[in-house]
Length: 460
Image (cartoon, rainbow, N blue to C red):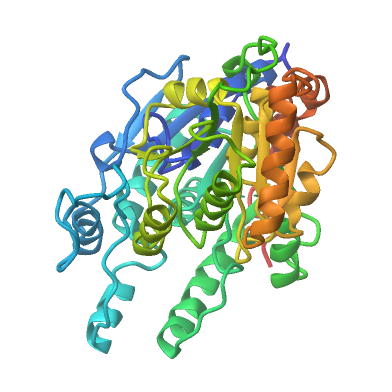
């Protein structure tokens, strides 16, 4: 394939560099490595001004990118304002004794009349990015014809991108590949009558996308199984799991670390959004109790969180206050991607949280945590992530609500780091199959098969 004339792939993805959302990484890395395997990417994505957080660094490789802005949307504007304006009755900008940076960015939640909830759903189906649909679909259609692309690829969420790709595929006649990083309708079950009504609309839309798609990708085997079961027999033969992995270029070989002196402060780091039940309070309780019991020396550890906080911060603040952890726990805003990778590389222990509502998930940062070679403290039940990480001796697992179990895991990881038995390079030789280059090689092979099949071969 490398010796033939390159084929062209149109990537339709709302999240793309310089967007700091983790969903951007998958499309960016595909775009980086596809030329090595005979595919030239062309990207249609959102305008930079539509991103919440951006990376100041330029895209580190050459790739044609077309940006199209969202049309005005009351729902999108309201969502942005709700993140930036303090909640009524909330804490003032500075509260004496409050932990620096611990402020929730989650929208205010209060009971709303039915008509408001109905209008909100009408304006946010399939998601709050729906005003990007028409401009993105039209730009993607024009790019597909102008650039002579062989395949249209969409990445979601937001699922609006899948609909834009569906329209562009239908108008241009190009085959469609839909990539689901997270579920659309196969995630959490709707609870209210209004949610069930719009869930049926979403399911109809998702079915149209899947029918048109020649190939459907899922970011984890568990998500693939959920989708195949929900849409049987439609996806029995055309849904493939392709995990995220990491870019080896982003992670130079780790330098060995000498055994830490007893007085050295050990760094625990969590990178990413705290949301959907990812509550670090039990972990902080375990740290506080170990300090009180003498299992950890005073000021021997530090815990840093980097990224938005979208959980209720009041219980978390109460935990920090009760255990007097103000001097060793800090919350920081999002940083650039390179800064984040540097922080991960310098940490001693990386904290990973997995909740009951996402048993199928393999978070993207899981792969990058592994790539650092650092110790990983995994707080998770017996889910897909735990099974995936089980072979690595640098991973120490406890249930996220089991404080005694967390304390035991912390003691084990601290012992390894202090004694020098934590070998940062030991597991890296076994990670070659997780390199983005190798995963993109598989993606390119799948694209080659799509071209041979043509558009809509799975359509029923």
